[in-house]
Length: 83
Image 1 (cartoon, rainbow, N blue to C red):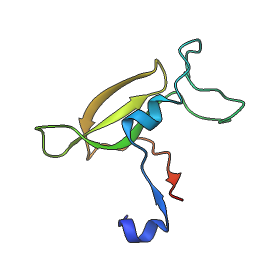
Image 2: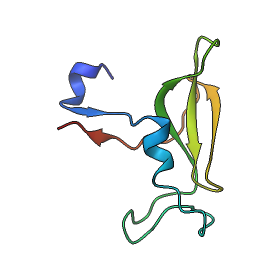
Image 3: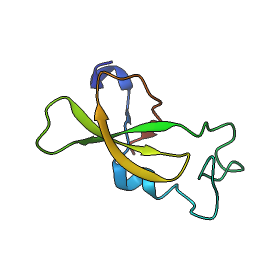
Image 4: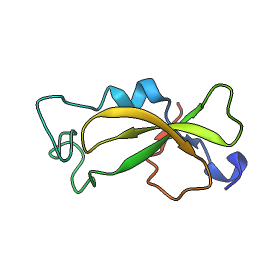
């Protein structure tokens, strides 16, 4: 989806997603009271992986870490609204 179709919504940065990780939790490592029904999967960030075209960073909410992955893979996205 083109950025113009997102109407003020965007992918969060890796740093923004990592602020949602609560290390005291596991499977998922996110507060389910604040974010109900969040799967313990991978969520794309807006950060491209340095030096590897076609790769970007994602945050794993099963265990709370970040890692890079090929962008042609289908994983979750949690959009944030720009002000």
